[in-house]
Image 1 (tube, helix red, strand yellow):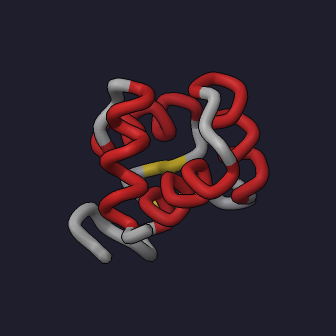
Image 2: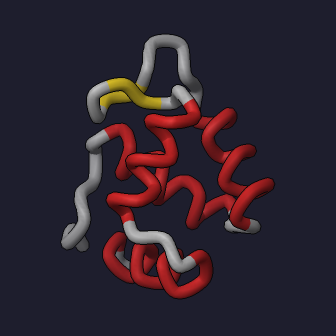
Length: 76
């Protein structure tokens, strides 16, 4: 599955766009100014996404990649 397909599926399941997940992560303190905050580990973000949005591990990791900037919307 492509990265974009993950994002599309996540939005269909949660109703949240990638930009909304970025804003929510900022509000939760996982990111600052669009970058991961110092000391934030992927497992903390994954736990949040699983708990609050019932995402599976793979979909949660796609959001982590988005937040880290290693992947962007539109990437395959």
